[in-house]
Image (cartoon, rainbow, N blue to C red; front, side, top):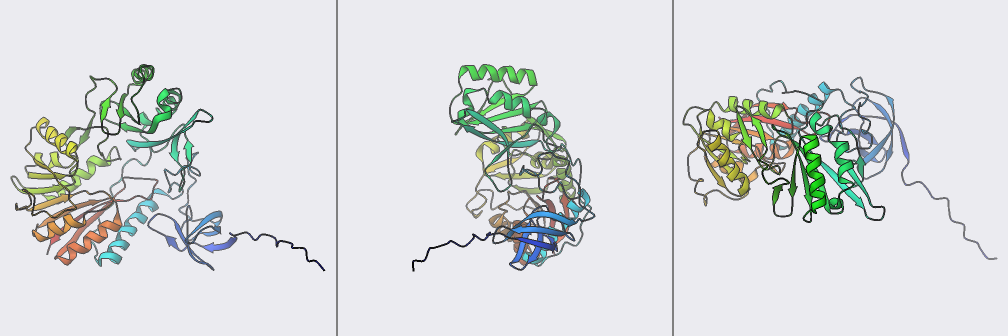
Length: 436
């Protein structure tokens, strides 16, 4: 007799896992649970909570329901929180956010460097809302529908969430979101737009458009009207150049501790409109610079730490990897009436081949990107520099570099979290190392 094949009912690949206890937070701020399938990480879950989840990956699960909430859980005030990928900690009370960040740094230093800070200072904090003075907006132009979407990317996705307001953006930038979206959607350059950046500077906000082709005159006219109506400066970033929309536009400026600096709108500046200056003051206090004392600063940018160091009397040698920023740093030194020796160099390479590499320095300050400063720390340690202030936005690479310093006889004297990124899991920390 012929047998007729009947497919079995398809089993759901992912099944709910009920009533799991969250046992901790990982360094990305995700809840940690132990399921029958192993440890999983759950966004928006907090320690001590009982939750239902859906296992959806080798290491992840999605939160379905909070059965027993944490005492530190808060209702996120942002309407876009569940879809936008910009913030991931609004559901956690602010004090608990900062406590977690300090614990994360301590654990990483302990685990990867075998080192403990001799003293943890009270975290530096300021505004927790409307603090961010720089934001990058993602752009997508649907050629079929002739429709532009401008906003932030969803978490772990390329999808763009269109927004009308953002609770972490500085108010002058926040007010630009809707009128800017309405403007750009009607420009011919919308089809060629890479992304849009909003930056708050001392004189006025800057709208930076990254585009793949030169703009048409009709677009230029509309952008000029927009800039005048909203008191902003528009800059255009092409593949190999950056230029203002209006040729007479001067470079934007921002405050550091005790100085005003100019920079290109594409240059790096600290994101928190208040704590950027506070961090500089703390770094100088920890270095305890004496007049004419030789200090080397690495990853110097356009002078955020450099100019205040020189104003404090240090003989500063500043190293930066981007030639345009070195030139801007030299300009800022002249404008602020101080002398600085600035050089462009790749700090991932050994120093002996550099003219400044053979000099003697008493103290060092470095503020690297997330990749840290593996080679630079080796070179600092070889030179027996007595005191080092290391500012980090990545506890994992800080821990790696701290292990190098420890191996060369340095102790971690002080550490302090700087809550540069409230409502997110991102961490900024300042550390002081001294040779024992």
